Image (cartoon, rainbow, N blue to C red; front, side):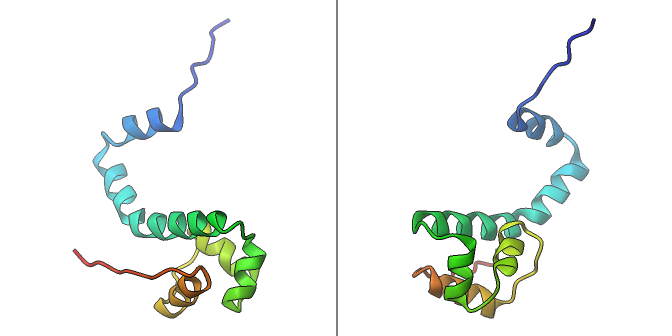
Length: 95
């Protein structure tokens, strides 16, 4: 019986990055990934649940879930409220 080979996500990503179309799509998602990652890290650092953060922001838990899951295109206003609730700043760089 042939044994299946398993790959880590890093190995798959490294292999897939050889594909130019994959690279383009990956780069398109980078801003959303950075926003989600930074919100999650800040929330966890403060030991807040999504529900806790949502209360501080004045929104529902589903909104925070969508932000963290990269399933939303948040407004600057919402990101500012999230940053304020996390006692942090929002910085936007256009390169």
